[in-house]
Length: 290
Image (tube, rainbow, N blue to C red; front, top):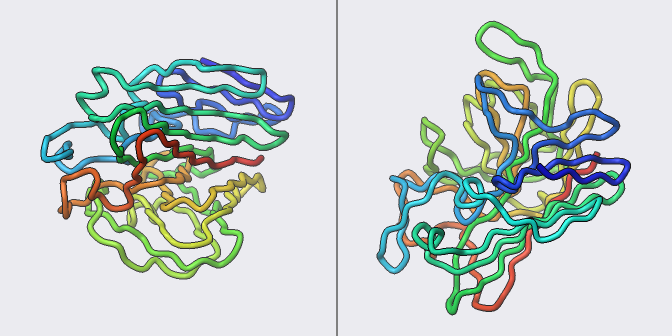
């Protein structure tokens, strides 16, 4: 475990998966700490495919490849590229083992940097191959919520997510298990989204897309706020388990999960997939401000 601290924020990162395990300010824990009855995770570095592949596989030039949920870093131990008191950079480089799951040569950098009351999370993909590579990428931070425990579920009502301005959004809807997408449709024009477990029974995950998704604020019902600068991701996912769990995940994604009936198995043809030509770099970042 690696901990960085700038006197305002203290953040811990696990080399296994490269994801965050703790975000504290003045000793208060903002990040979900996991639970066997809900979700044992806390955050995920997602690359090179978001969520699940239909039937667990995709193709590149017609050849089948299999990959676990959310891709490669989640199941790997990342290298520590560099560490300062207030910053750490981790990396994952292609190997013969990764080529069996993802047939491209790459290097992924994950950087966590503290700047006053801001935690900046940055992902950089470097194409080390001799051809264009294709991928999705994103984060999965989970934030603690105050709640009331009731019979059969956790009541998280009174907590809400607010956009900086009113936004008109579409949503990628999911089939009944919440594993795969079915279609893209209208979500509506909103300024805030009120959180409840019933909301996540209805949507499973909200996979929102639209303009002006740059800044959101999580308002906890105890008055504590978590602000996020998202840098206009292709998709903003909002998720929590629909019964137990005092948390909400606010996930900026450059990509989207697979469809229940995918139009194509080819990775390069997947909806919202990113392409990166040989020798080039792709950078995506978001910030958490407390």
